[in-house]
Image 1: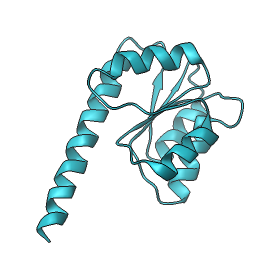
Image 2: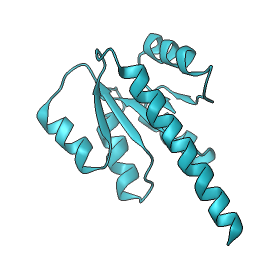
Image 3: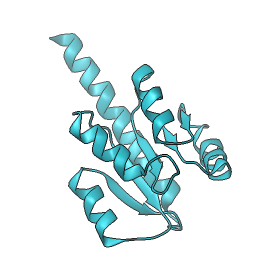
Image 4: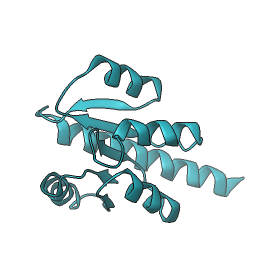
Amino acid sequence: MLVDDDATSLRVLSDLLSKQFQIYEACGVNEALRCLDEDTVDLICSDYNMPDRTGLELLERLYKSNQKFPFILMSGMEEPFVVNSVKFYGGTFCDKTNPDLLTIIRNMAVRSTIFRYILSKTFLKL
């Protein structure tokens, strides 16, 4: 799932990743939460600064409700409080200007998908 209030950023990332993955798009935290009520995702990749709430607030809410998804928080500014908070809640911080951003997202998505697949096969055997 991609969460970003910037329609251009959302569209570009979605277009680049949709060749490999099923992409859910949300224009903010509230829309992301509604989507998560209806669908299962393997990874959440969220912008930090959005009008309705921050991506950090989304990560914190998921963490506190015991919904632990692999989570990448993206921002153009590396504020120590935000970076440390993301780590505390089990997420990964990535600067939006990082040239390896797409690779980081793809690698986390693949690992998460494989992990979910292995879990599903394990539970089917039980």
